[in-house]
Length: 436
Image 1 (cartoon, one colour):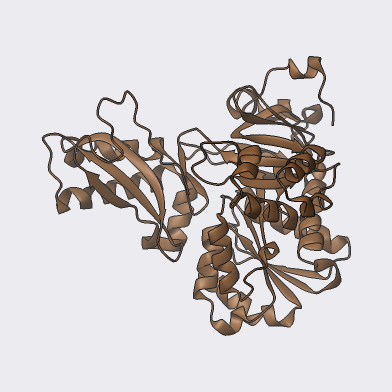
Image 2: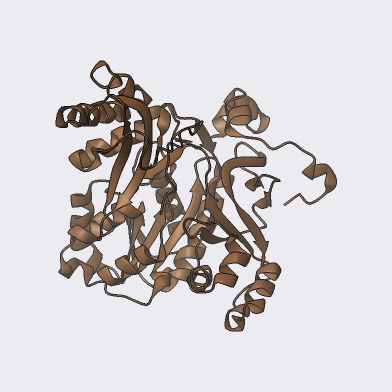
């Protein structure tokens, strides 16, 4: 991959706003050929309006290669019959169709692999796991972390008495979450059974966890020096840590800490900024850090030719709920409603909370006006207005609500004026609390 020269590094970064949305899509594609796209995927927009991104044979081959590394090296699927249950949404968003196409590509490479695509409906995924899973040597459950957890929670013990692997994308996971699902499938202490992909609609699979990256991340959880060297200080949560292929993606970090990627696809990406912050390590650099922190037993497992990415998160105003993005703009109109506006300040914080069983709740902390009063009627009105706003403004949430119903209804937590997350005199409301 081209990169590293002073001339290349002098090129300005490109973004969704000034590149993908700044030009007609056919003008960005190779040779201006709109039919060069084999499949269209969409991003999620803050207003519910997606940006469509084309994928062609190059992108598909990229996806097949990445999934082959995961299924062969991580899950041992090259020597066994495999059922892949795709629980990603099977709409225009990339997860479902991308995974399905990648698995078709693995079949063409000789893998004894079958797919079934229940999508988001949990009951159908559970039925599929129970009815088809035992007919295969092992099963790969692929989906967003909260959706896969729902499947595992609803599945009978008989369905979980199989050789189950878990393939995830869409949001970060913690090591305690990984341990929770490993216990659920009866394989505690085997973290390699759970693999998280770092992917985007614009660029496909950017990287993925391996047994090595997971082991290093788990070591860093108990080694403050290693954590500081890899992830930096002032972390509210442990970042995602993945391997990437330097032959297919050239990765950099700009002066503001944003990851930049250069890669070939239907639309060439040149120093493209996805708005994710993080760090990039060569295999050689990672070997030096790990060895210097006293973990020499891991050094020989690090290929100097590999690349590694730290994904610390996005600073822009977005929260994640069931692996979809919730923006402050999606909710703003709810606080302008006639029955609400005189009783609250309009300041709110979106937060994804977990209970003791790692179930997610979309919680919105709301500041009550100085002259206002918290009442059950006000709470009921705000819940309804927030739900209506999310359904109207966020296409992904609309799909999620259609599948999950009341589980997606937001919860309202009132705070007396100037208390809780609402610091008196703050010039700007931080609408999102860092996810954990």
